Image (cartoon, rainbow, N blue to C red):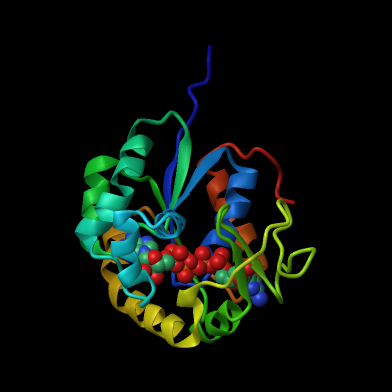
Amino acid sequence: MSSTKRLLQALIMGAPGSGKGTVSERIVRSFDMLHISSGDILRKMIREKTDIGIQVNKFVSNGQLVPDELMLKTIGSELNRLSSTDRSWLLDGFPRTKPQALSLFQIAPVQVVISLDVPFDIIINRVKGRWIHAPSGRVYNTDFNAPKVPGHDDVTGEPLMQRDDDKPESVKKRLEIYSEMAGPILEYYAEQNILAKFSGKTTNEIWPQVYKYLATKIEPKEKLA
Ligand SMILES: Nc1nc2c(ncn2[C@@H]2O[C@H](COP(=O)(O)OP(=O)(O)O)[C@@H](O)[C@H]2O)c(=O)[nH]1
Ligand SMILES: Nc1ncnc2c1ncn2[C@@H]1O[C@H](COP(=O)(O)OP(=O)(O)O)[C@@H](O)[C@H]1O
């Protein structure tokens, strides 16, 4: 009898710099899931200087949330694709407001919400060392996971960059916004009994907890390294 493939639709939430991208990278290495990052989608539009990219950049460069209606315009087609894919997926960075959570529910309900909880003083320090390879979304850190060649992407050798919104004043503002906005969304998912919170000071502490939890929901591709 063919075993029906258990599909998983999941979210990963957490303050800016809490490790969503880093943990997502480990998740897709260990589980057969697509990783969709709202931040990466926005940064691609901004880089390509599309009309919508120019509009969203006004908010992203100031560390403000892109307004819900405009945000749905940027990610709507991706969400619709997810609602009909036969792959499991992990959505990173969306929703960030209650209205976004309600819109997502209409398009593609989720069964698991992973919430990362890392002290803000640790985050502020970490983000100073964040470097990204914008085209791929690969994330590095001078202290935690430095590139083999300083300033260059391990895979393509292309130059790394620091994000405009990683300047200290912008990080502070984004953390404040997160503190304000995340509560109602976490509550919304806790009421549905699908919220799983993981706390720690480092990804290496958090990751094994996330792996063990996800392994109860979806078949791992590989054992925990
Ligand atoms: N020092 C340290 N840096 C980390 C750790 N986990 C992730 N990072 C780095 O911290 C920064 C923020 O991580 P990222 O995954 O981009 O967080 P996101 O903004 O929530 O997606 C990046 O530069 C990561 O490489 C950790 O455990 N320790
Ligand atoms: N769901 C969203 N709603 C509104 N704005 C968003 C959303 N996702 C990303 N953004 C914008 O893009 C910026 C970068 O997002 P992201 O890459 O997820 O940040 P971080 O990795 O620091 O958590 C946010 O500060 C915000 O301006």
